[in-house]
Image (cartoon, helix red, strand yellow):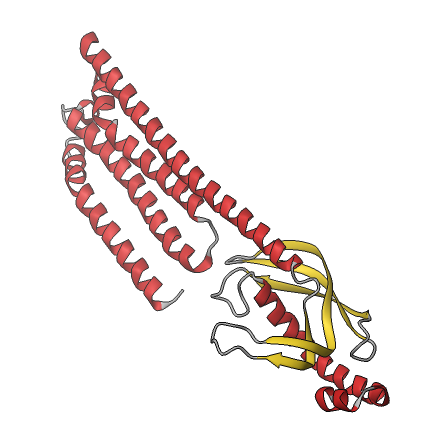
Length: 301
């Protein structure tokens, strides 16, 4: 983790510990006071203040552990990405709902444990039922929100994969040439020059076996592709297959060579065949030199 993550983690731990110490001070004092009365005529285990304070201490300890765990997991997850956002939301939400439920039911449970009249007991039981119902509703909301988030992530990822597959399939037929007979340059910055009569050329023949590999921080698309190259003079459109390769590209621009698009795929392929294209030009000019016209020799060789 970087320095900012460590600072954030330390601040979070110190704040949570400070709040925890402040919350447990009063119930701790009550438990201590009643504990000093052991051995006397006063039975602390039957005193509502002692029972309430003791239960509060237990609830605050559980809450502190939960909050501390959420802080540590959330901050370290920024760096290591070992759990997705929806799962982290579900775990954190469920834990916080449980912690709140533990604290909310303490007063009613303490009174029921001490024994009360029937009318009061029924009211306390209804109150506990309402608290439990509220916890279930809150948990259902957490599940719905985190589930909807995960669904949207998966839907967006599936759409991204479908687009990436189409972009990869569009590579078939694309190619690169050493020289061109004519290059018509338009005087507009956003208009690509029109190139015609390229030779010699290397093209992508076919694309197959498209798969996706999920890494810790990103996803990669991998696919096989064949390469073809010219075998004759410029007027001969014959191509033959000469190579078979596999390529993987990340789905994020934050990583070098990232992004799923035909342009990115073409750029990576070109980097791998650039030397082949130079060698093809030299070999073709040497082998077919006397079959080329004078103009073709000037343009292509």
